[in-house]
Image (tube, rainbow, N blue to C red; front, side, top):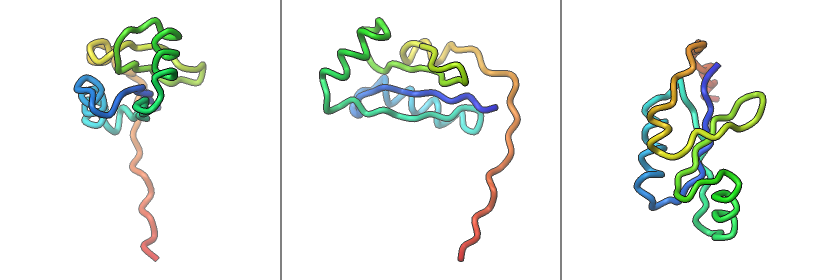
Length: 96
């Protein structure tokens, strides 16, 4: 199973962009969803309170049991990889 991450971030934040780039480079073993928090300060403050973080990005790992906080950009780089991975190429789409 592939690792799936959720990156709560701000579009012009260097650390948020680094986190996304790191996860892009880790494909197909790691996939991610970027949640753009640019337009709601109240949402950002709620996330920081809920996850007890003071900066962005806030990165979580999505599992069958729910979301588990990884931390920020620094913690994402240090997260141990999932060792139970198998990758099957996606099916080829019919061009018609």
